[in-house]
Image (cartoon, rainbow, N blue to C red; front, side, top):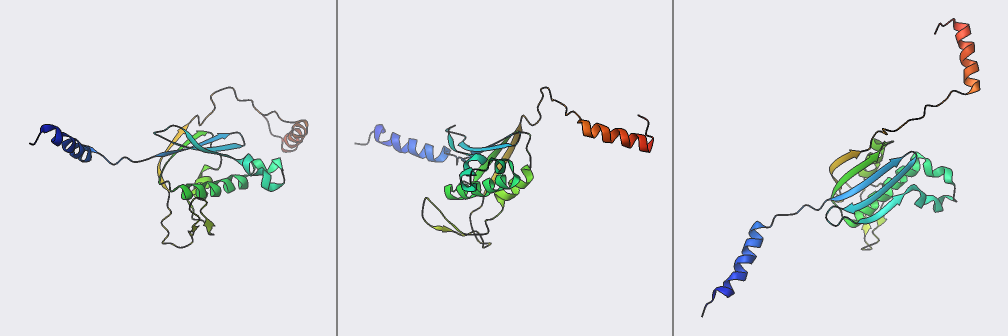
Length: 181
């Protein structure tokens, strides 16, 4: 005897396979620029949970606790290289970069992020050696989109006052050059 109940699961399976679309997994790379601070976090769009978090203060332990290094451009580039290693280890392809705040050196940061590594490193998850020096390496990152938010502060901006020494120099220059304001 052949019943309809035995046919139904096969039809549903066929419908699922036919209608099933390939879902592109997109990971959000949140970059926050506030003053001299630079913070990066990675989260997935579907789960909405943070996978990891990076800031320049995490690398201070390796530089004998000098806090002045934290604000330098070189430290932000070091963070970009470390971020590339993490993204390659996790084998993430499609990345949506969300930029919050006024981005300082964003072009250089992205260039360092998408530039191939000049040395090999060991993948901590698999234990394999990752070599990006050859042009045949398959470790590429895809920039899916970039979104900017809060790029300009709309609140009150304090103007910098001129110091006493600069005022004296300006008075002398005006007197020497006979400039009329």
